[in-house]
Image 1: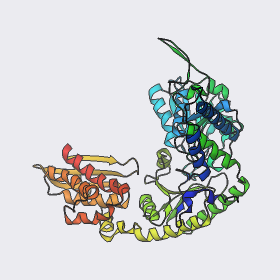
Image 2: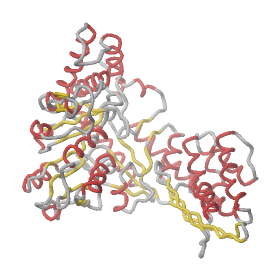
Image 3: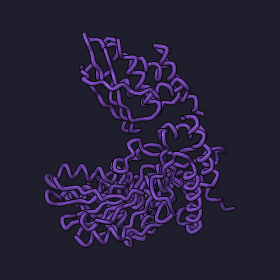
Image 4: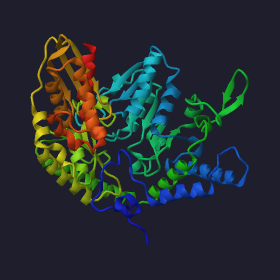
Length: 400
Length: 134
């Protein structure tokens, strides 16, 4: 008997528990946990080093995981770099491309970025002396393309953008950004952490040059992320981390790098986590995404509709369903997001309150106290959304 | 259920209008980077004793309430005594100590909620730094 999507997630079996914090950490299907356990029981060995039986199994599992991620991204396995997470992947992208920039160069960073995406470039700009330009946002939390030509100038070397905002849920028009970047010879680096959990992605077709995402937001284990890059881009990049497994030759005074993707995987890689991520992406690939997207859209609308009817609630982000993922942020007049999220937790509703590691966006939207964020996933049902709306009304009464 | 955190005493403290202190001898602003709370605590001292205090807070209800209590409680204390308020609040929240003064009992329901301790402690940390800096 096949499981429903929700039944595949053991953590969601608890009655009265409504998980709406998937943008921070998605739940994990039982079969993914089992895949990790099975790997550790049968193939726990270091990779690319040993000749014994377990090592061969580990090599096969790790190479297989890379191939699975490649299929998910419609990309060759050689363009898939495993990392310890999306933050590391985005740092690798920044330091790999940005360390050779300097005064006179510019990097355009969208104001929708998570700190993991913008801070590496801010740090590099400070160190290398290039200029950072913030791509503006519209009042409803989308990238504002009105002055894109003026923002992405001939001095621009890299454009950095999220595929989907972790605050507003807005999906960025990557082809348009890629076109602007190409016009001036710049590269496009994309944070896909919030997009990948909602279906397959083809970064090359979208115009990205580097694309990062996290395992734990895509129904996989923690401690695993992916940096996909066009082969020619990866080939020209320096690694952020050096160590075992990534070298070509090593002498007393110098060493050379190996070829991608291993160039970027110094040390023992997260083998079991990669196997788990592959299991998660295989699970995702087996879903009927047309049906999932319809359900996510219906629930998002139900949530937006419910919030709109509540006095003092301001939705932060698009009010409709076009070009968005099911991530909904909002504020409640007179109620701090942390107090609301605490009171909701007491009612079995898991949401996130705060700035969501997106201070540049919060500042420009005048949201110094942050927002309350409900983030949906394929396992979310109407009961979850109703519990949030009901709990929110109660929490507002407690605080007022 | 976590409704007990938001009792009448805490809500009354949080609703108080913060005092504005001109000519402070020391002002300290502290952030809680995890939740985004920001507290600025101002003190004026005379002969080593806190004679006036004020504050500004952008934060949750617990942080606002704690800031109001820190502002009120500090006045009249020696600098060391004002700084020790932090130990008293931390002792109650983290080590199970009895409330060191009656008004602090309003925060007893916060004790089991470790993730909210910093909301209450932040204003007292700012106060401790302010009196030490003056």
